[in-house]
Length: 230
Ligand SMILES: *Cc1c(COP(=O)(O)O)cnc(C)c1O
Image (cartoon, rainbow, N blue to C red; front, side, top):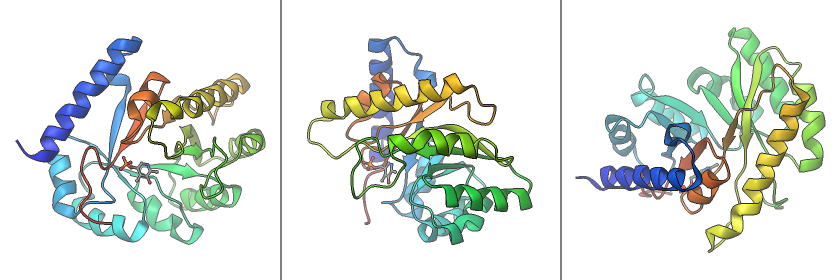
């Protein structure tokens, strides 16, 4: 068994174990293999193993992989997105997890309209208010969501966050709980273009906690596909 195969098996068992503990159906937790640290053959191996969802955070790097593997799998853009890269991203990725500002939403709307697509996006929220991280602050969420939900070519399918780096995964729990609370609040507004059923949260270090707190998409790099390049 290859290392990737072993990792995938471990992760799958772990998802089942955590779900059983909290009474969730494991099929409601979907895995994105974050391939930003690995080469094309490894990304290809992930697809061969039946991992359908790939996540990339840099446009250049993603395009290299996409040229080889693009027809297979579903692509998730998870990194900071510059407006001048939106066109390239929309041509290749099915989901954007890093919608973090109004000017980006406007650009996505403009480009999506031209290609006649409705783009499923996750609103990235900087729950822990970390200086160095992207994402909306809690106080900005309402205006942002209400405005963007009037756009015809974007659909807000969920919220995304990255928890602060900690040695103890348990310390990330309040961040995930807060994202869940924000989701409930948005859902109360009952906006057609912002149903936000999904929570994209949990990475290699903290995905078990994220699942316990309601993650429906987890984004796994190092613990799943490994880390062979920076
Ligand atoms: C790199 C990255 C991940 C995966 O990181 P790991 O800790 O290696 O699992 C997940 N989400 C985002 C936004 C990332 O940039």
